[in-house]
Length: 117
Image 1 (cartoon, helix red, strand yellow):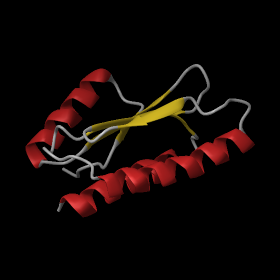
Image 2 (cartoon, rainbow, N blue to C red):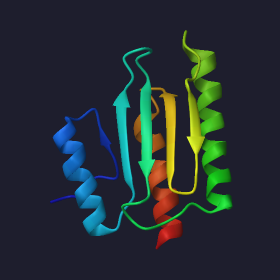
Image 3 (cartoon, rainbow, N blue to C red):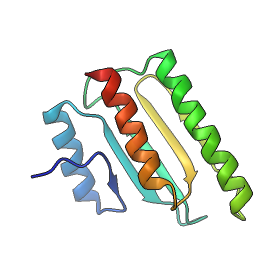
Image 4 (spheres, rainbow, N blue to C red):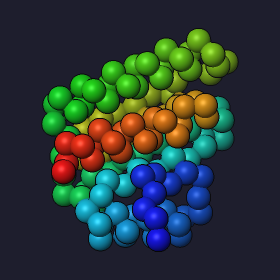
């Protein structure tokens, strides 16, 4: 079975199964779900599955990644970016474009996984 860096637009039981798998493998849990209000993605990161906290440097890198996405969304969409919040254990982003969701989620995972290992 292949481990997926994130899970997108899945059923609730699939998110639950992936969360447990992340716990067992000590990996970050990242999910992406289409927000029906604007059609872009709501992305959530949960690091409690891997007993890890984001450093200030990692939070700064994630903020740079999200700022680039906000600029893209606001210049290429009729909707504004919905917002984001980053703490040491949980982060969410509301409004990531469908064109960038895969790259965004993989970049988040790679950033966290690089520092975590």
